[in-house]
Structure formats: C-alpha cells, structure tokens
Amino acid sequence: QVQLVESGGGLVQAGGSLRLSCAFSGRAVSSYAMGWFRQAPGKEREFVAAISRSGESTTYADSVKGRFIISRDNAKNTAYLQMNSLKPEDTAVYYCAALKIATVVTDAGLITSWGQGTQVTVSS
Image 1 (cartoon, rainbow, N blue to C red):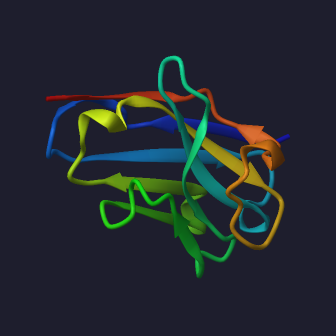
Image 2: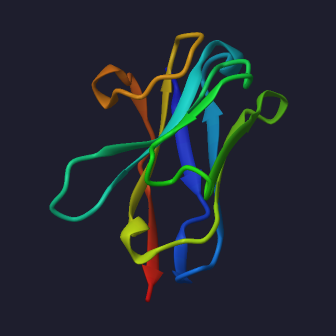
C-alpha cells in the first residue's frame, strides 16, 4: 500500500517561496507518476502540477506555470514542489498524489493514493 506524507507548508508573504516535499513509501516509487493538487476553502480540489514516473515529463496548471516547479528524486523516494512568487490565491491545502502509470496525471478522479495534505497560507 502506498503511503504519501507531505511536509514544508506554512505561512509566507506574497512574493515569497516555499518548497513542499512528499515522501513516498510502500511500493517502488519509480512505478508511479506523482502530482500535486490543492483545495481552497469552499472550492473543489484542483490540479497543480504532475510529473511522470521517470521525471522526464512535467505539466502544470496555467495558474502556476512559470512560478512552480515539480521534481522528483526516486533514489530518495521523494517528490517536490518548489513554489515561487506566491500569491494570496495560492492559499490552500496542498495534497501529494500518486498513480501507477508511466505518464503524467492531471485528473484527480484517477488518483489512487493521496497524502494527508499540508497547509499553505500566503498573506498579502
């Protein structure tokens, strides 16, 4: 069974940066595509960024493109989300996700494994 544990969330001022980490365990991480989703109060969970199991392919939501970078280190069983130029509208609970598939995954309905989430709050 896959287990995902996020860390790195917190409170930051607008324009600042945070790096989220997602520790993967339970299966061979190299078999899983990984991604980040977020959910703000009163809103549905939305796609943020995804990376293929090899790390060669990435994709981003338009709202974060050019500001966020997703990466992974399979040797460390960890995925990352570097968030730069943060805006108040980035405030949400951020969830790490995994799916046993080669390519990127952007549909939350397909995800089979979720982390518990980490809060990111951006003050104006």
